[in-house]
Length: 216
Image: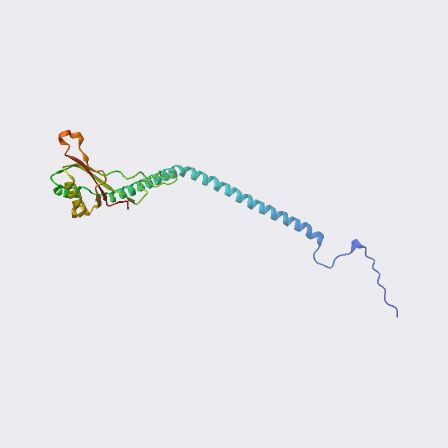
């Protein structure tokens, strides 16, 4: 028995695919949908850019309106900081005051009769190094400052000066302020300014180390 023969009489352009999706139909549809999506995206993006531009313009206008007030605020804040720093430094100087009045008043009854004080002086502290130009701090840069007291006068001899030195070192009215005292070398010399008749009068000096000045 011979096999049956199948004769295909369809041309190539007359053949149809068995798939339900037609390429010739889907390609134009896909291209159209893509173009529509791009158009929608571009419209949303343009609207967003326009909205941001309006918001930027409004923000710049608001900043321009607020800038004078902001400048005034910055100036007031800077002034407030300067005043606060000045008040702080004034407080340091107030706390660092050393009161000599009570000590010197209590010392007066103990000055020997043959001794006359002509000078009571607090020498200035040694000069500080130049401030750092980058530093914004004002006032003292060291929390402690050395304080000394110089006494000078006339006397008939070394004994009254030694008695005064003993008072400065041992009497309670002085020890709360004066830590140490001494007669420096060469402190006694003749009082030539009072004439030859007064050559028996001696000039003297006493130096005292006082409690330090504390800026805190």
